[in-house]
Length: 54
Length: 184
Image (cartoon, rainbow over all chains, first blue to last red):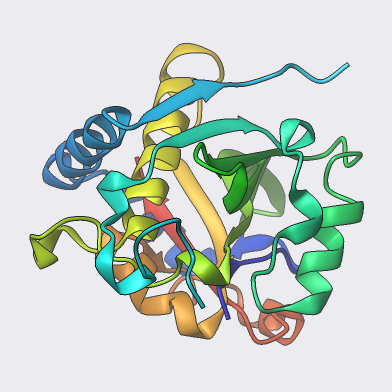
């Protein structure tokens, strides 16, 4: 099966006791750099054409 | 079954497939999309285009207009309760990410470390979300509910388990999915 994610009827509610720990989590610049580099790579054989709704 | 004109699925790399990212309503062969889950296929084919709470896209194989993948994004958030107040922090939710069964497990290039075509497609989605949140509408987290078989896929990308931080009363609504988040 190739469904990777789907919605469920639940909100992302943070446990009050873990709020500070959760909010302290920040981005990893190494991960961001890797993703953006990979995204540039796909541009070599991909085009983008988005239509606005309405 | 031959997927392409001259090569089998095993003979082609993802980087050789010319792709086009389009709005879902521009996908002419949506009826042929098959991700392996009939319920999700039906939602993708008949409901997503008219769903105003999400914006949905298709990634097409330019050679034959096959829908390689479909994904759907929403403005969302996560809830924090503090001192009897409720705060909502913005996030982008990836409501759906589904890959056509024909295009699963296609290695992206001859370097196996680069992963599969699905990885490359998903990195592009994340890059678009970075661009949107940096230029149009702020948020610093991406959230999604992963199906269990995709958990490792998202972990390798950099997503983390939200279960470690989640209010436990919510877990009965997860319908077998795993809430995950990504810090942008």
